[in-house]
Image (tube, rainbow, N blue to C red):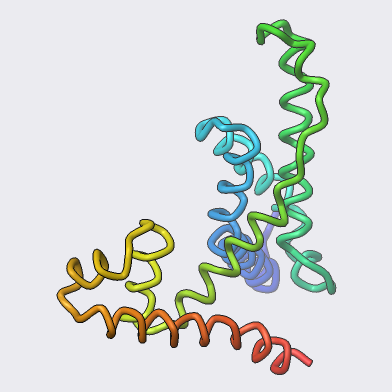
Length: 179
């Protein structure tokens, strides 16, 4: 007779919670990374799903050991992408399979940098973030931004200055807190 004890149920619930945390914390980053490598959203989703399936049996160990969980996941994702790209020509699914022997560039640094920038932007006030997004992301001038936001150009310049100053000091503050 196969009976489940309370300890087993508690352990299973804990394992499920770790898996949910893993998925909520890392799925977007993994998807962005895989999509950048493949230029195919649907294939990237398949790769991320496979990455999470491979992480599932190891969630306890991933959270209990030192080291980067995201680094491990990005490495698994990259390896799966390489395997997928190498296997397609072997199955004669792609035209020009000879071109696939080119080494795959590693974009993990750029993905991690963009995630760090996103995290830093969240710590800015709405007004400062809004000005930076208009100027840097949308490529608008100070005057265009001022007109769109309905504020003086001087206010846009001031918000830009203080937002950039805050972003520049944030990595130093983070390093101080973690030391």
